[in-house]
Length: 97
Image (cartoon, rainbow, N blue to C red; front, side):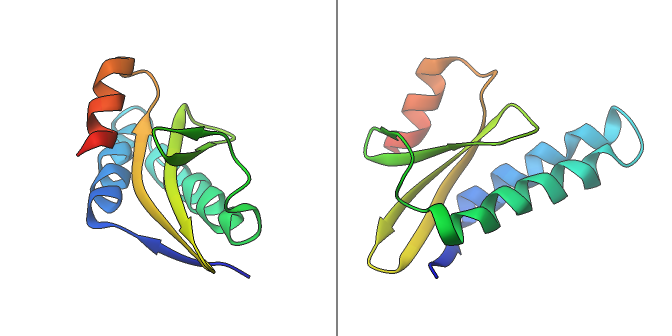
């Protein structure tokens, strides 16, 4: 099974996604739970997703978010968790950082 590492930037991205809590009580927790399940799924599926700018792109099953990761050996590193409603150019710039 693949080991998962999450960068500080990706943690910040996940925290920003908690804004859903302002939309409805409990929705922020649901967001966190869903994205955590998507991340855990990488233990089995890391490295099989479409690549963009050198990152594997995993689309979240519930929310309009994408998880960008790399795989080296038996370790998947998550570098960004991006709201796909953002400008595509903004997303590409974020990945280049």
